[in-house]
Image (cartoon, rainbow, N blue to C red; front, side, top):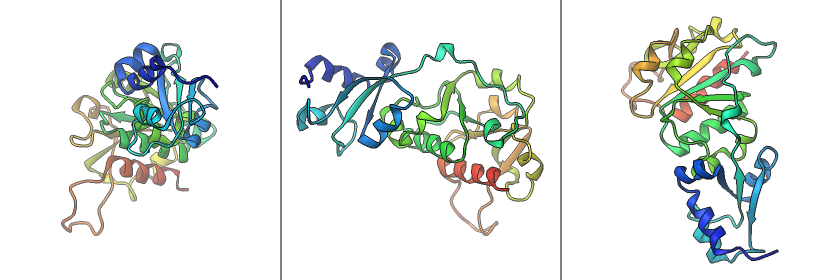
Length: 245
């Protein structure tokens, strides 16, 4: 295998930045398990390990404190050819549920949410334009290959939500108890679930479209506790409840 060139090292390092990921249509993944999963869906452009690069060179290209020894560059899918989903009833609950992310900023949260959707059979995530890039290296690593099975799209959320007729569920502090008041919604396999920004929650522009506000109650209720749950954990709790028979 030919030794990696300086230009290839420069390319991999440039993909730490969204500007170059967008311009080149490429993204980076690290670690044998993650790379193996991503190869099921994405075309691999470049593979780097100890056979064609030194430990120092791999460390220079890695975004991790402890490099895993293998790095791959993949082609991003052509987002212009993808049609935005429409929430509509289907024969399988796993086919209709859509998660909407409004302003999620932390790459770790973003990656964990994608991985959580993969576990709970949510195949489409629709994001506001200011939500973290799903091809950010930190996001990719946190997904552990879930991007192979979960489609992540970005759009003008208010415009998209205005066209939907399905139930739109949003997590709000003054919403109804998740465990007591959503049995009717859970039976609708085409529901849309919205999760908001880590600090500010769901934006006012998006909040106006919520038809079923919900909240995750603390335990025991009324006792002083943390202000809120981490958004990735909250997403897992909500999806688990929606998948519970």
